[in-house]
Figure 1 (tube, rainbow, N blue to C red):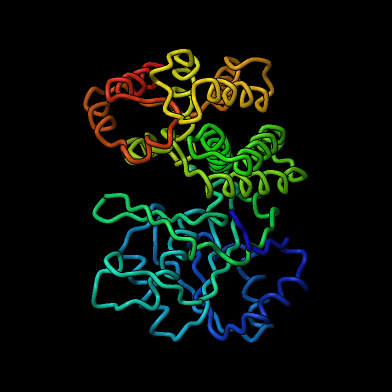
Figure 2 (cartoon, helix red, strand yellow):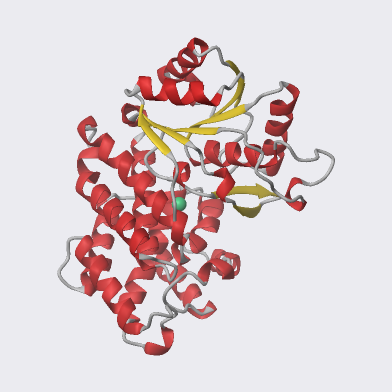
Length: 375
Ligand SMILES: [Fe+2]
């Protein structure tokens, strides 16, 4: 898959300026989380834009897991002010909102945006990620919610053309956010690697992402800023990997966990990948469960390669290494509840399960949630 993104470190200011001048933006909608507005980097970005004679219209009217209404408000803001460019500064939510505003900005505002055809409106979309996790800056996916229902939007036209990387920003992330976002990146790498949609290209991105995150995880959590660049790059590469493959059952099972228990997205995804991987390792020899068209042998090789990337010697070790890592992070577990097991089992998106390399029946999904709660 061709990737025309320009990626610049924030310190490569000349390159950024040159790129921005080429876009000739006059008025920019700056989509950023309300917490980002308090950071020094926000002022640095605004200073740069002022020097480029770009007027800034800030937009922060959205929450984590943004809803359709926030996107509509963002489109209104964009149009009312006559903006001609968009920049997202933040984590996955800011990216998702900015991507949707870009896709919907020139649509008829009297009709539901989701019912309208999307054409390339040429509005520049720039990204400045402030976490090392979602990888959203590298993907064609955006997730928003309407009346509690998750809407997944997939469109090449919402991939930001410029990504600015400043890993110093990670020093300000709270420890739980660091753990959860790094786990999100790691799960993207793992799920992408075993996805039925994997290619040689996606596997090489995913492997690089997993190695980078694992090699630097401990130092990153202990506050050593020397590894921030690697973590940021790992998350970005994981984003490139899922841009090709999409995620699999780990993410499909995770969304409702966030809703019910309030766990951060990466925390929820890791709890699911943990149980899934153990199940896959136990059932790898059952041919009828293999959902990858390339065959059971291919899947066995993939899981063996994955274990090796994780630092193990044989296939079964991959799941164990991941489990030990997750345990070491001492994250909150799911409290047991029959009612929640029913809700969670019914919540899993069957479409996303199709990317998973091992067939999972409803009974198995129920069993995995039950084990997660009894852990
Ligand atoms: Fe994710």
